[in-house]
Structure formats: structure tokens, C-alpha cells
Image (tube, rainbow, N blue to C red; front, side, top):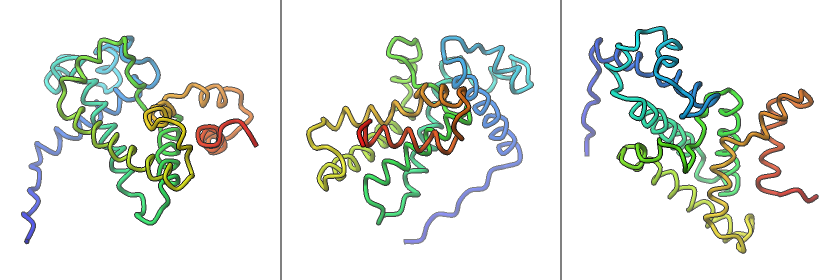
Length: 204
């Protein structure tokens, strides 16, 4: 069945997308360094170099802005996951996700995962694009976790949910920041150390 031709964006639509991407890039940096509760719309506008009134033309509220940022993060996560070769063992696919997440975190491009106590929680729950992407990421990770448990590369004694949230938590692990501050390791070494502790624990 022939695919429908991809509709090209108009120049105005391209400019709008570039501006919104720049805004979300700024939001990612601020969420990575300050978190949602401390981030302000004034800071976002200043980071992008636009007036706050212009910012509100793109995103109606701080909640909408953060929800869009988190949705784009999940889209990027899915894209990275889908690039994994089919022949790659499930444990290596999981490691690749953690490697990408920690690397993105060290570049200060990974928004902090929203706290269960944060006011952003409600905004995310009612933001359908976010919940759809989160469901897709969770489902794929869950399949890889089960496959890795079946072939013995992950412990079958651990509930899959524990492994899943451990993997999610690596994206905002402060250990990476402390190790970088210490200056004894390169970023690449930090990433591999965190992968080792995540999947192999602290034993030889």
C-alpha cells in the first residue's frame, strides 16, 4: 500500500517549530539544573532570549511547558530505543538506554524526573501525549526486562517493576554529578561505572 506523501511545513511553521525547540531546549537545561518547582517562566524567556509575552504565545503555562518538555524527552527515548538492533540481546538494549540516559544527564539535557510531591504530577497525568509516550516506553522496557529475566541475564527473583524504576532512576542519578565533581573519572568512565553498578551490583 503506497504511503501518503509527507506534507512539508511552511516557512512559518518551520520557524515556529525552531522557536519551540529552542524553548524546550532551555526548559530541559533548567529542569536538569533546578527542577520544576524552582524554574520560572522569566528564566525560560531569558534563557531563550525572548520576551515572556512571546513565551506565552507558544505555551500557555509553566505546566504546559514542562509537560511538553517531558513529552519530547520520552519521544527522544523512544527514538533511541527503536534504533537498537533487533539482534542485540535484551540486556544490552537495556544497558544502551541507561548509557544514553546518563550521558544525556551529564550534558545537563535530562530533565529531572518529576517528584511524586511536585505540582507537575497532575499536569503530566492529564497531558495525553505524555501518558501515551510514557506507556510506550514502559511497555518496551518491560518486554526487554522480561526477556532478560527469561534468559538469565537479569535476576528472575526481582519484580520487573523494581528493575524498571531502577532503570528510570538512573536518568537523574546524583552519583554521576558527584563523580564528575570529584574529577577522578571521565564522563565516559562515569557512565560505564553506573551501568556496572546498575546491572551487576557492587560485587565482583
